[in-house]
Amino acid sequence: MKVKNQIKKICKCFDITTIKFILVGIVNTIVGTGVMFFLYNFCSVNYWIASASNYIVGSIVSYFLNKYFTFKNTERSTRQIVKFIINISVCYFIAYGVARPVVATLLPGAREKAGGNIAMLVGMSLFVILNYFGQRFYVFRK
Image 1 (spheres, rainbow, N blue to C red):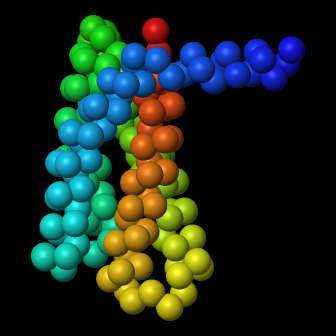
Image 2: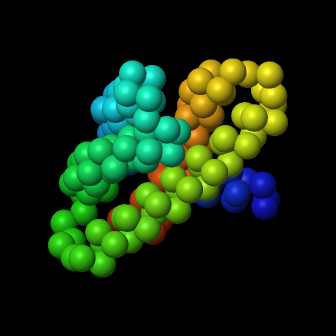
């Protein structure tokens, strides 16, 4: 019975809101990833600045699309914007702070550029998961 209830709780997280979040995420990924990899590979900007640029640009797009399209939230408050910024910041530092050392440990022979690119992909994946739950249950909670 406990397992059945846990499965029901997990399934409640995967609904139309999840699908909308994924669609917004696709837009954010195209925009933010383009910015990040362009800066890192063509402008020789370092790992942290390139990945942070991704989330600054993507977060602006994400805030408005998720607020009005995904979560249909009409609240107008500075508090919500602050919660959004806190959520994005915490997710970013956890995801990218974990990704770089994990990739360096798993791929010790990888060249600097390749390792950085792989770490950014891993960081993006971790960020998406953390950010979804943060936005759904913290920032835009009903």
